[in-house]
Length: 108
Image (cartoon, rainbow, N blue to C red; front, side, top):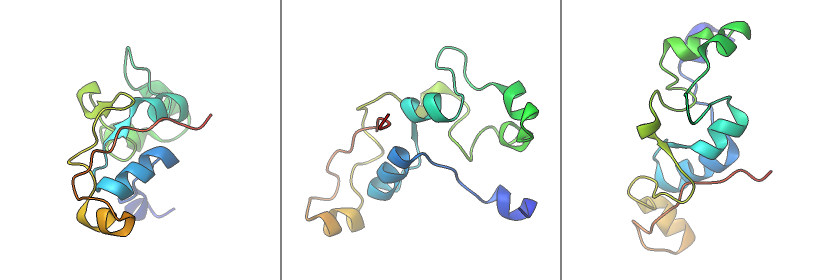
């Protein structure tokens, strides 16, 4: 992939994509990041892993494309995501804007 295009990509696991679509907040869940993106809750991202698989660009950009640099920016299951349902999602779902949306769990 063209490096310029890659640098503009955001990568989500499905549950985090769904909460993003509902809230327009791209904060990721610890469940998705741990199970699908090699994040270790007690120690964080594994820089050497990304280097070994040729994705050092992810750690060079402080993991912004797949999550966040610090655990303060990663949500435990059920924590509120952003400001709840966005206006457009609320309208589409027939719910009230701002309705709470909880951080997701994977489906495994």
